[in-house]
Amino acid sequence: MLKDLILKNRSYRRFHQNEKVEVETLQELVDLARLSPSARNAQPLKYFLSNSPELNDKIFPHLSWAGYLKDWAGPEKGEQPAAYIIVLNDTEISANYFCDDGIATQSILLGAVEKGLGGCIIGSLNRLQLQRELRLSDNLKIVHIIALGKPKEEVAIEEMKEGDIKYWRDVQQVHHVPKRDLKDIIV
Image 1 (cartoon, rainbow, N blue to C red):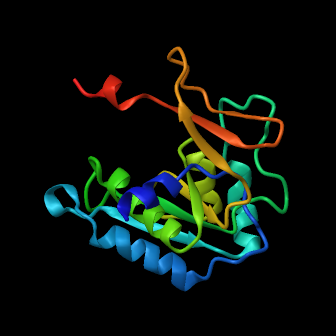
Image 2: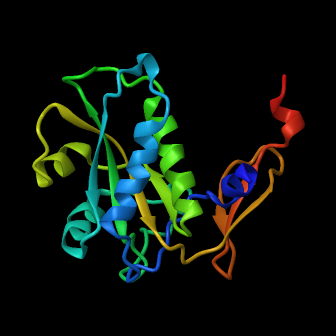
């Protein structure tokens, strides 16, 4: 059921790094994005796939993790993503990707959950340095990165208290994510 996939689709930030995500799996996930709707049907998004430890090690230092967790610098070795899908806008196709990135990324993440994987959308990163590191052509602009792997953490949805949207971790390292109540978002 779709709701079950959505409930399992959390922002996982710690993974079983040694459990490889095959390139065929990454291609299947990108195929879900390819088949998803695109504004004006322009289809300006392209994807860079990484599942090798060497390439992942080049990507990881350019990422920022969990802004609300001020005392946490991100996943340690052994808990880092096993794979990445870098979402790119090909500006030779269109300078504006409208909402395509959100649609495509949700399709990828729901597909990942269905396969027993989890992911995290990372928008806080050093785009220009990473573009140079990966030798991407100038027309390919990094929109965001999807970190992927088998989740190594529990993420719990909870009721928002007093308008506080900040996620947090308890002493057992369960990641708590407050959500607004349905009655509060329907106008």
